[in-house]
Length: 154
Image (cartoon, rainbow, N blue to C red; front, side, top):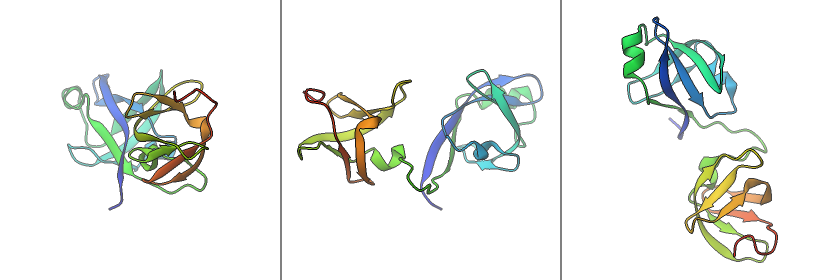
């Protein structure tokens, strides 16, 4: 099996039949298609149906059949295998890599990615934030090259 990525989290039960609200982070919405399988610490979960609901998705999983089970699944992390998409930048390829600017300066390790409406932000071990739009090249797990304005990383 390939790398597993966190793609969402069950946030709460919805209704009496086992439906749940999922905070879904993946841009690959086909992961929520009927018969898709997401992995969790509770075992595989097979999507029966899904639809947008507020800021998340209302999802029915085959393995969650009543409200009690849905309540017990609150907070469960959902995972899926990484997929290759030409030209796509993936957080899991950048986290742990070193951030290098256009002058060759190493600004430290990227420890996380933070969602931001204007541009997702790379979080450095120093706490510095770098907008994703400044990334010019990625060597997965090794280096992320950026072109940043003067003073951004000082």
